[in-house]
Image 1 (cartoon, rainbow, N blue to C red):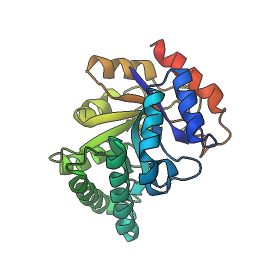
Image 2 (image 1 turned 90 degrees about the vertical axis):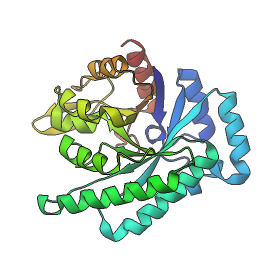
Image 3 (image 1 turned 90 degrees about the horizontal axis):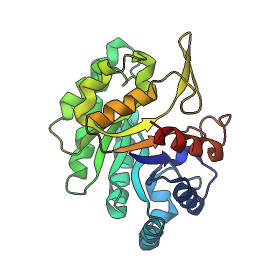
Image 4 (image 1 turned 180 degrees about the vertical axis):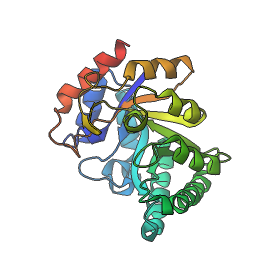
Amino acid sequence: MKLAFTTLGSPDWSFDKTLEEARKLGFEAIEIRGVEGKMLANEIIQFFPENQAETKAKLAAYNLEICGFGTSVKFHDFDKYDAAIAEGKTAIDVCARMGIPSIRVFGDRIASEDVRDAVIQKAITGMRELCAYAAGKNVKVLLEVHGDFNTVENVMDLANGVKDCPEFGILWDIEHSDKIYGDDYMKFYSRIKPFISHTHIKDHHRANGEFKLCPIGEGDIPIKEIVKTLEADGYTGYYSLEWEKKWHPELPEPEIAYPGYVKYMKNI
């Protein structure tokens, strides 16, 4: 079982502290979602061409990998489509240079049933464009299960439109699909299984249609069952803790959340 965490959970940490803590706590990788206040791949100092060799040397010294890069690319806002594609292509170039195996993108929102087909088609177009750009660069383009792309119908309609692209994959965020399927996660998982390349692990309490994030293992998501299912089916990707501290500052500090995650996952 390979464990990682996204830097979303420790937005105040420097890059060096992130590496130090990851090694100390027993993680195998980190997933980049912002470094030292910079969210765009080409703005992160450690990824500048002149710093590339030093950054790779540090990762090797700490016996760590960068298992993915989280972009803000989303396709539901047609007016911002060109900007989204530009961001995605820039991230692909940076990841190719740094040996980072994937970028994460979103669908993301479907405002009404009237626009559903148009949004999904736009997302298919965007995914295909980014996948074509990533061809030959050893970088995959992963659709995150997020927003309104957290149902079998919406995710699979998109996946079927890009399934011929080797660069395409799905990032299964188990918290977002739980909002629809709850304990009956197999209805969702069984359909997306062939495309899963990466996972985000989170937990929440379910209460009257609301969902409140909480430490791993303290909520209602059947994490142990999900992980056991993935393991039984031969999943070899990372289990990446997405502790949303940057967006939810009220959450406990990473010094508490990260060790708790490692302990929980190692005991599954």
